[in-house]
Length: 151
Image: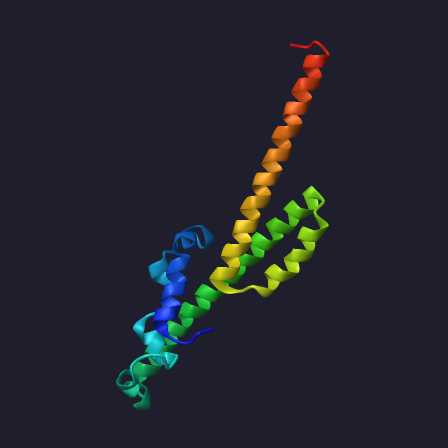
């Protein structure tokens, strides 16, 4: 739950190493909330919000610019999440994992960077399972050819 800026920043730093793989070309610094965000959200120092009480072109322009940045980040996160979920679904289908396909619904409920990170972690696991199954089949085929006496 969003209660204070340090808590939000701490949560984002926990997943900081995954950000570059979740959102190619982005760093944790680009998605971390700013002091401005904390003031907009009512989490900053009370005296820091005084300028919100004085409407001006600068205030509206600043809010609009930051809003555009956050909307773009949200759209990018959603786009990457949809791609990862589709890929994960294909892996579950190929592996015949019906329970995994049902878990996709849970992934659709997860949102933001934490949801995307969890989906990508599951996808990496399924990719590993697929590679292991392929390697196992290759080994089995090699053994069968050896039993047939083919070098």
